[in-house]
Image 1 (spheres, rainbow, N blue to C red):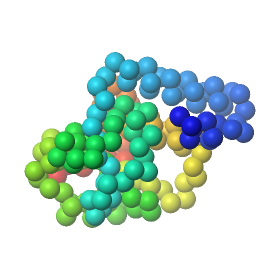
Image 2: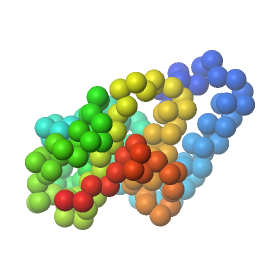
Image 3: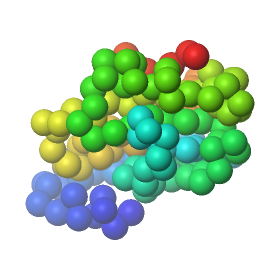
Length: 150
């Protein structure tokens, strides 16, 4: 959690406590769930590791073998959901279990978004909701991310 500790520096105690409570809620719930194998890819199907820590804190584990990934998250800095919706269909392979099970997720990276503690915690919550639907509802689906049906 070192990257979060760095982001928490400079926040007042109330802000830190509120963000920590949100993280603790996610951590407590995922403690009783299996880690989900996740492949994080760019639109050229190259593995991306930008979100490894966030995925781990949200109850996932990075899966290098795309055939073994239960979920695929398409994420590329600077790409909007519209960009991803346009580019991802050509990148999908119907042999992948995540595609067969409709577990492909497009994640928006707002190029104007700062790397803050609030944004990092929100992203962890969103990824938890992606990987464990029904256990988490934070309300950003359709805005920051969408499930993509092949």
